Length: 275
Image: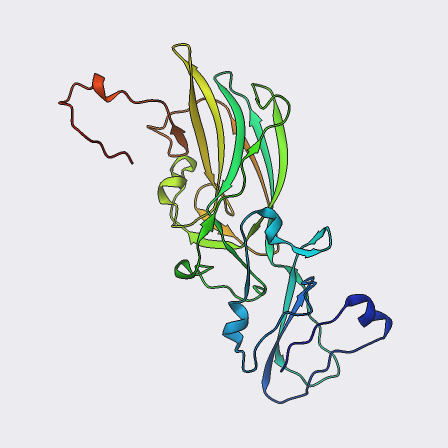
């Protein structure tokens, strides 16, 4: 069939119908809502695979939404697969992106939280993904990742003990799989390539000097083994910083303090490799 663009108000007021051809063969019909793009074209002979690869480019959170003037809209998509024999078919439209609600709580008297950032986000958000997705999606070879802008905590830009804040962000689908692990502090160690994570940044005082520290949390269905962010899903997380923690025993902790190699007991070298 050929793609057809409909404006909702005109479609409803005129009691229009989408024309489908009854057939004894199996048909696959996709519906995409809120594109606000009547010029969206698919060339003659476009395959189902071509349609599934059609995507919006994501550079920041605003670019994940469709635009109509100053307004932003979430894309929806739905699929019908089967033999069309009656005058109507029923299709459920689902959001093609992910909603994430984040709570950040500082319960530590050692750490001051300053900002946070979403990282390793797929640079593509696909128009249709309301079907059985493969184990790894999007395909690693066809995607790059981007980071959303840094978000500073409100007030004076410092979240101290007893303070908390809540945020909402939207992400493209990123299904990176499930691993074998039951320890939260080891989830980062098993993180698949290009899995999405949240980085919370702050500082702590050591010998009178403020040193930077970060906490990295990979997102998914749980905090131990699941790295899947699935379409039409709403994930709720509360990240509580209870103590400074140690990078030596917890893979979620990143300490960025200065290392003075001149004080090493080993013989000095003319260069160093830092991982």
